[in-house]
Length: 271
Image (cartoon, rainbow, N blue to C red; front, side, top):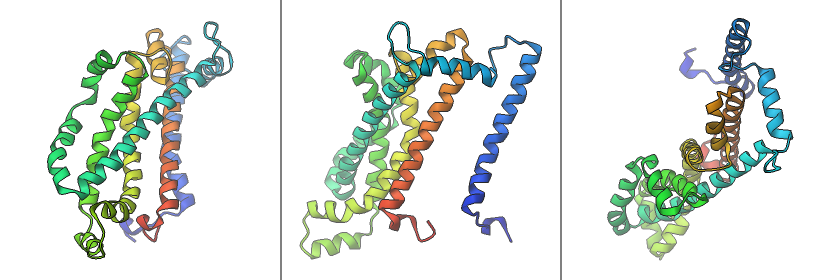
């Protein structure tokens, strides 16, 4: 049987998916052990014991200045910024994307503007945002929104515009207005695509969040990573990066499960 025709069972998928991760962890442990055998004070590849000790202090020992548990305070601050940015972007993508996809005059008027904003590197706008909005939370959230909302809008608009024209014609034949076509025909079919677009936007959203926190913040996962890098504290940086990856994976899985539960018809019979 050709590999292209092989189907992998769920249990086997878990095993095959975890294998490369386990190999990377094993390779890291071997390299770290070799470096520490030569130089016990090596900071580049810390041993698991060193990372556990550093993270334990950040997770369970209150900070002397703020009295907060640093790790959880960083996580909460970053998740709040990310959640607000993703929420605003998702709402904008749904509303603007539907209007652009269903209404040709709106698409002709605002489509070029959305495209122009989408192709601008968001990081290049960061100094402008900090000057215009200050160094507070607004600028950080705005960077996430500017970074992912235009791309999500374009994706939803293109998906809605590609819906079979027959559906719109039949809806109008039954007396539907433009608003009813948008709500009853386009919206239900755009929702699975919206969750898919949100999944694809998670990675860039984290990049913009970490970038903003690294430049102007006093709490957050990105802030902590760039704060301790000056001390070569890889025993903190590596666990923080791993924690960000775990959070992103959990979000992706939740969105996938939610999409399959709410819109099983959009995933085909084999899903």
